[in-house]
Amino acid sequence: MNRQRALFAIHIAAVLFGLTGIFGELIAADAMVITAGRACFAVIALFAVIRYRGASVMQGMNRRNMAILAIAGAMLAVHWVTFFIAVKIGGVAIATLGFASFPAFITLGEYFFLKERISRSEWLILLLVTLGLVLVTPSFNFQDDATIGLAWAVLSGFAFALFTLINRRAAAHIPAQQVACWENLFVALLTLPFSIPAVTQLGAIDWLWLALLGVLCTALSHYLLVSSLMVLKARSAGIVIALEPIYAIFFAAVLFAQYPSMRAVLGGILMIGAIVWSGLRKADRKPA
Image (cartoon, rainbow, N blue to C red; front, side, top):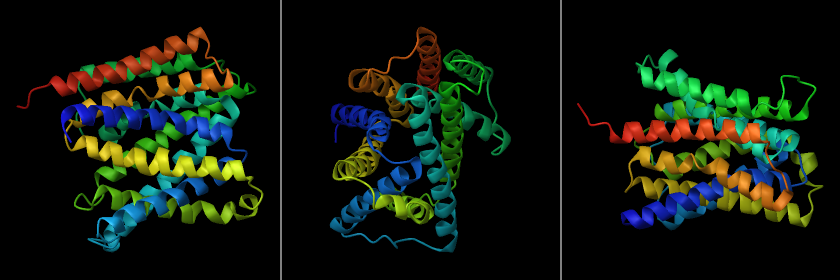
């Protein structure tokens, strides 16, 4: 894969990530059922890819790696469930913008838990993301559904930040598809017991949306992301992925007529701009 194809792949991955909230809106089920179905279809697709390549899901696995992947899977389950709750309550735009706060939580996690030094410019970026969140907040009244949805979305971003930090310490020598397969398996095991009664009530169209969510927005998007990272720098890929809320808001406006307020748009611009600036700044930084 050359650089041009890698850039195309990472943009397709960002579009697929942006479609996640759209499928969450389309599926007539609660957040737990959507998460369980998404994970199951993703496991099937990822397992098929691993076997097609002649690899084994048990390669390099031991108790320590299994435990780390189980914890990461639990955080991924919390992230997905809270995100889909945010979609159902606050809409796609609010859910996606709230989730976009996760880079700020990663920065704080690196500072407090991994004891990594944070520069002044990174603190400024954190401040800009916080101000963006304040602008995105429809009101400070928790009787407002949009505010409640945003709170769930921010919690989803926090869970995803923890998931990311755990993955940094996960078995680095295990192939990415294998890691994703195990993490999705743990998500399925955690959520299926709470979803089995409701699963039997899903309609045929809901099964189709679940399959597309699991195969396209989870397995395929992960494959495209990993493939592009073999050519692109992580910071360059991160800048493109930061465009996910823009795609999500566009699809929500076209399909559901969900239009964010001007205040939310300004907050989103501030947050996404800060994230892109962070990626550009670190991508351009020369190694010591």
